[in-house]
Image 1 (spheres, one colour):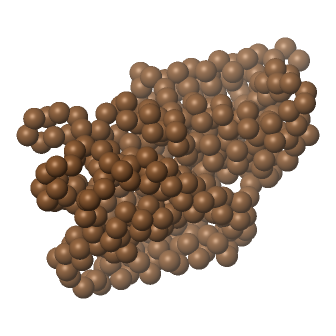
Image 2: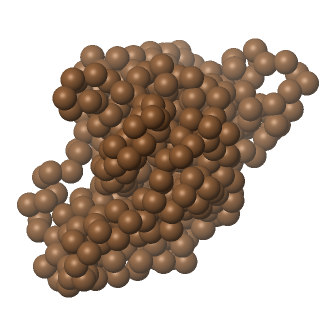
Amino acid sequence: GNGAARIALLMMGLIMTAVLFWASGAMPLGVTALLVAVVMYAGGVMRPDYIAQAFAKDSVVFIFGVLMLSRVITSTGLDRRIATLLLLPVRNLELLMFVFLPVLALTCSFISETILIALLMPLFLVVHRRVAAETPDMDPRPLLVMFALMLCFAANVGGPGSPAAGGRNAVMVGILADYGMAPTFLEWMKYGMPFVPVAGLVVGLYFYIAFRRRVRGADLDAARYARDASDRLGPMNRDEHITAGVCVLVVLLWVFGGDRLGMGSPVLLGLILLNVFGVMKWSEVAKIHWDLVFLYAGASALGKGLAVSGAALYLARGFVACLPEALGETGLAMAVSLLVGLVTNVMSDGAAVAAIGPIAVPMAQAAGVHPWVLGFAAAFASSFAHLLIIGTPANALVYIMCRDPRTGRQLVTQGDFLKHGLAV
């Protein structure tokens, strides 16, 4: 009894410490993950072999594979082709808001939103500069704010679409797996994918209503630039063809073989094929964001430790006890969504799910609700990091790009993110 209580307390202290370090950046992400390992080993939370297994879950292998695949897509130039393809239908404001944004959101369900925004934002900056030169009587700042924020928000809401959208989803799959309840790739898509185009249209509708008067008279034919960029790229080369084929194969294996193959092995097979065909060099592996892999490994281990020690159930019961009785299943899902939605704006989306996810799933059990209800609520809500620049790497990237090169003045401010992010 005493030993179990001590381990539960230790795990509660450990998750609070990890959350503090993730939120403040006081320690590098990787070092925080190593600290989780050391404390779990020293505290005797589980047998050493089990701790190692908790760090090397299927979801962590999946994260490594997706980061590596993203790197290959970037190095072959396939990402630039995808970006120009997305822009081809955009000839006016209506097409931009009601066709381009939902399609962008859907694309971000499978491809890293950070990569896509890194490619699309410069194209929109070119459109912005041309419009500012052609319509001197219009204030150019609202147009830039609209471009920057619509890209960020539409890309963010692509998160619920599939487990491949971001590490936060893989963390949630890992947490649900601890309770023997992991959804397959296809099951996740069944619940998450219908949300994405609707959310993309809502983002489009908001920006259309908020900005259409201020950008009236602007010629928003982004397709022209997409065609120019596409001509400069020339025809697809061998490497791009192979990479595209491998990506399609990986997604098909996730969708149709997810039950048996899990999520890690299809993406590893994809990397092996890319290496065999000479598209990917092994030296590239050193260049991926290993701190992200460590963050998700540490998060997986924390989730497992909280589940095994009973600390998650204790915290979950405490949270459920604080809520009014009449809330019911929907109210509980809303409470978890709000909590994760707030937390995800002050620390990375993956860290938010890693902190609250392990408590959300046992909370469902304590309240007699299916774990997927609160698990999906937590994972989906982590895609709403619209308020602060630090919410997602994409937000930070766009903020940095929207600086006047001549004067150094910040053209899209933190205030813009707060005002429009709250509305969305």
